[in-house]
Length: 201
Image 1 (cartoon, rainbow, N blue to C red):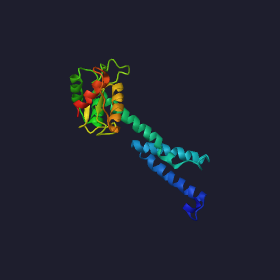
Image 2: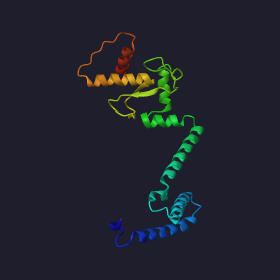
Image 3: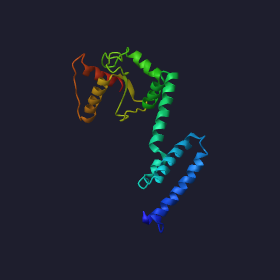
Image 4: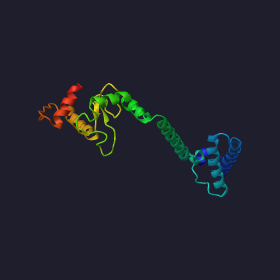
């Protein structure tokens, strides 16, 4: 710290710092009409109170901005905004997720679900029959888009959680095998899965 300060002593440096903080405090006290200044006002006031009590030598300067509190308030604001949007439009969060993750619309999803007679493309599972009550997932080709997000061109059908996982494992075997020849028994999950994949080739 001596190297950073130069010829000034640590005590002088701290005295100058807190003199500056008092000026900032005086300025922000006149700017209380701005919500953001309240955060700075409270943070600086707390720091100067500690200094006057002799507790300030090891106080990190990040306390000035109350970074954690600002982050919490921002999160709360966004949460309240989303809930408000959801109250106005019951499909808001669903519409947002489908657009951001799969580049599809709620109408596309509902149309695909109708095409599958309301259940998973590979089993009789529906949203009502699943314990978690979650909607069916949009399946996409991970050979095209390797993450959870899809480009929209490689989307396939709608699958329940279990079938989605099983199909993912099957596709890994198929991609990583030099020769992958399977003759599944008819009317089995494997036969449906291979037929399903072939239909989206």
